[in-house]
Length: 458
Image: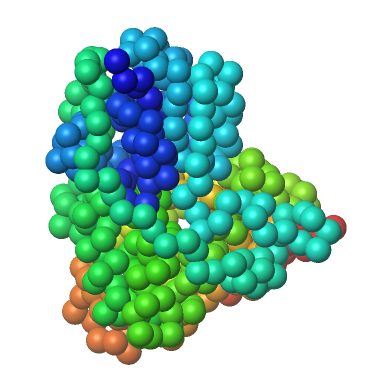
């Protein structure tokens, strides 16, 4: 009988440019398995919005596998124990998988390697962490020199096609039911907007890339305009590995337009993963020790403000529009993410970790590396970060980036207001009764934040 090998899927839910699949298929019969492991990540088990995406992405992956003579086996539990049990059931000893860099996955890989022959392959990033190093041989801490060094190795290797046929094992072990996992929301079902905005899966990812090629030329300017949503919207597809960064790089770079600014966003994604390899606790600890002394407001005191921020009821239209878009669609425009995060951290003086946790539960692209590094960049506590003393002015940002129609779409109470008024209804005496007053004035919030920073510096 042909030896069976296990193919362990995680955040790499595709068949194209899938080095682990290619290696496994070259050895004979392949048993593809996805394990819903909420044990390894502990507090970083995937959030509600990501679970919605995962359900649909796994369904699409199973369809793709079945079209090639295979299917996806589902199990729930600890990764190492489950893979060992499956290997025993089918007489396998080898597991192929793409390498992951989140701290819990690195620990899980070590645990699997103690039990089975684990063969790890690269493919989740443009280059593996450590592939480019400083002159002293260390990992880069600052983005700009990292990007310059990585660019010298680009383009990445050309993506490989999916195999036409995947040899199945002679016998299939029992599989969980995807519906039985309860990944989709029911009481209440808050995902109606997700369905209209997103198409999870490899085919949806490739269509999204193709659509973006028509917009690459305008990206440098349009990416900052929430009303036109000029970003690629590829982040959830990249997070779940439905498309490889190499595939995106090659398609975008060959678009015929200068794509440098967008390609640097892919490089930032690599940079974020390098940082969590250097500092695995990036999602829960300040990367700069002095921020441990910053006098954040106590959560019992600030809890009502945190809830108002989460619900898009701050009285700052651009912030509220972003938070409502997030709840309705599982996504927020990147410029607005920065504005909303800065508002929470600096105007409300609430610890960045509370915002990061909310994003983790509500974003369909909740990625440990990107989410953690981006929040600490805004807070000023990151390895390479914005200065805490640079405090975004939400009202002027809204006007500067022409967010009027964006606000109209997501803050219905203000939809009737003209452009000259909608960014700051309070200042024009035009705030409707149904819309809340500002939680705190911009100058007051700014001064409180600067005072906290001075106390931190002591």
